[in-house]
Amino acid sequence: MAWTVRQYLIAFNMVPSIGGRRLIAMKTHFGALDKAWHASRDELMMVEGIGSGIADRFCTLRSTISPQNEEAWARKLGAQILTLVDEEYPAYLRRLAVPPPVLYVVGELPAQPGIAVVGTRKPSRIGMAQARQFSAYLASKEIPVISGLARGIDYHAHDQVVQMGGKTVAVLGSNLGAIYPSEHRTLANKIAERGALVTEFSSRCATVPGNFPRRNRIIAGCANGVLVVQAGTKSGAIHTADWALELGIDVWAIPGEISDPLRDGTHRLIKQGAGLVTDPSEMLGSTSLEASAGDWTVENLYEAGRNANEIAATLERPIAEILAELSLLQLRRSPKF
Image (cartoon, rainbow, N blue to C red):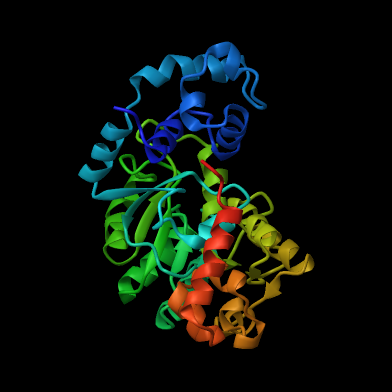
């Protein structure tokens, strides 16, 4: 039985080194995903970004890959798989220059983007307290807190929201069957009860250091702003802030003692123009979440994760007009798989 486009996306995502950019290059070169999947080694090597190593690996692995089995694996974990051709794929992640072609989700992703709270894996007691203070405020305002389930700041942000019964999203650097770090498995289960666990990594993906920079772009994509609590200059949190700047969303940083190396990264962000915040309420005073109706367009409301009915109500326009504009926008932006 022939696979659907959706199944080809799942299958390609199961091949190491075939990310969104190479997948688009393959689709562009061959014209269709099924032709790319069945291409010969020599044909594959004609695609930009596909060298002999990737071509050899792909040709070796593809006969062992079954998207149907992958979906069955996901279901056993209580997860659903979303692809770029699915209507349920979150609009706010389509803002990324190259959205992840496939997402694995346990729980329910928020309809609108939240605020990311990120920072070092080895925070001070003050950093931990600040992560909890700011996350508690966001939870009290019913704003989802987005983070990466890592040790340190991420843990305290998620845990605080869970304790308050709020919504939080954990973007993983591992597949759903190998939660990392393993000691956060209990927290992950609690997150999924009211929020979501999300990852782009398939059942075949090992947890390796290169996963985490990729994870950071999804954290930014799920957010309308990124708060860096405490971070050194080489922290992954700074990488997340860089993605936020590329998306044109707000970045805030909490200042600290100038001799503290764990504040070097946050201080550099402030020097570069990030918002300096000392109180949680200061975030909502500047974020696009608080923009006036007169500042909105169909496009930026869509990017903020609003659905058609919400956009129509905000702009006071007929729903039929909004649906027509959204259809054109989605056709223009979505990769043509």
